[in-house]
Length: 177
Image (tube, rainbow, N blue to C red; front, side, top):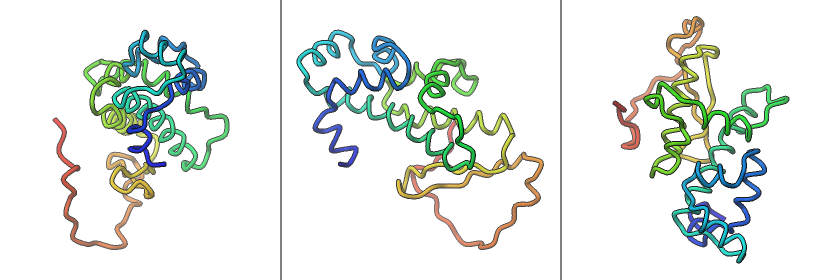
């Protein structure tokens, strides 16, 4: 089932319990992170109902973020011992200079949380300067990945273009102030 269909039909409130366990946080902390009303979530849990489209979107955004992190680590070549769920929780709780010292979790209730958190990940990756390349999921083509290149990495001279072609940027790629 496509993500849009799931959101439209509504995520079952009991998924919040499962997600809280996976993230190793209390339900109340999860509600706060994703901006779901505690009273509404508890009522819908008790009645085994689905969440609203807005709340479902926030839940799916969190689940997608965990999945993206796990995929990045899996494809990095050394996923042994890495657990995306607690890493995402710690990441969301840590203030970030890239977000004006806000915690990413403070932005989870906005309309574009995956973009904000993805941008922070990219900024953190560049700041660490540990890897020349990073493979990340494509937002434009979900089945594909993109390779990011750190232009300040000491091994940048080893990068050469095999094919050069004209490229027109997608409207979704824009400068960020």
